[in-house]
Image 1 (cartoon, rainbow, N blue to C red):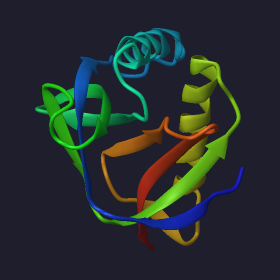
Image 2 (cartoon, rainbow, N blue to C red; image 1 turned 90 degrees about the vertical axis):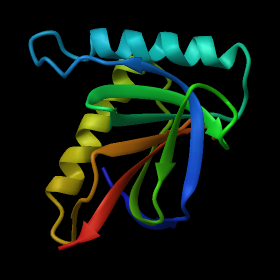
Image 3 (cartoon, rainbow, N blue to C red; image 1 turned 180 degrees about the vertical axis):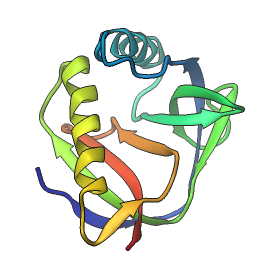
Image 4 (cartoon, rainbow, N blue to C red; image 1 turned 60 degrees about the horizontal axis):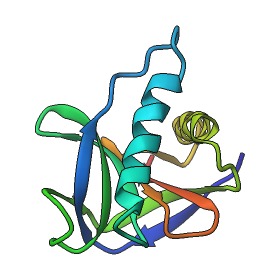
Length: 139
């Protein structure tokens, strides 16, 4: 699996959030993936060109389905300007996507040049392929 380092500008997203459970290796991704899939389906009924953000918001592990701007829901999150590891997959099934996200973190953590620099990631659902951005810092 390979990734490229890209520069993202600061951007504020707002939308609807759901709490997601901590990953349990015995259960796998099924519970978390089901919650995320439902949140995306609900948001997609009324919006296009949106993203998913995995983040700790107010002390709760959250999945925020959002659009760019501040008037799209009850929760906002700012993606800071900086460097991000960009991963792309053609996978469409949610559990496989969450497995891909886990593998992507493994790639960054095993990198000789960068490390994870935040407690969130950005799932860009505006593209035909699933695109993941993980904030990084040079080692």
